[in-house]
Length: 217
Image (cartoon, rainbow, N blue to C red):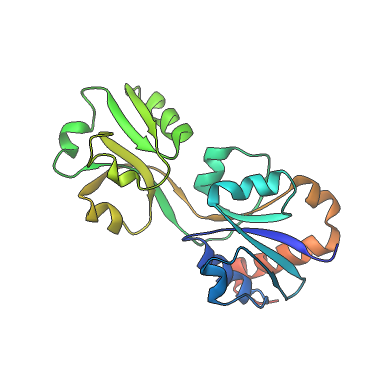
């Protein structure tokens, strides 16, 4: 095995993931990786091939063995329910999965008096939430820019990942309830754990030391 493949989620989790790798002793690539390059090599305690993918695709890469390890948000893991092993809470990329409505109508919409339409890219979790609360409604699946749905009449509200809340505020939305919180997790392909040997242990150990103790390899 010449290198281990680590799948990283593009977007908001990519910069903190690269920073963790750097603190753990890897020479991470420069801005070219965040500017659109999808694969590169990182030298460090053990050579890594970094693959950048859509967050939803990272568990798939790992589950099917295209990547030995992956960094992905817990929100995605809850939604996808892929067969991967969660090894480590990396403690970065904190966010909330939140239910939000237009601020001027939130009080009238939640708690609900009538069936609701909720736009989200997290249908599994939203469906379970509505069922647990016995809220009649319909989940409208959208991929990206969910905050537009109430503005154009597609839905009454949304459930989406919220970090700072600035995007919600810009679109006149207000959080009604938080479904869950999330941070980035290090996950592994189950077969990799059995066959990766010392190489996998080097990578996981280096990241664990940084996360738990702030120590570089």
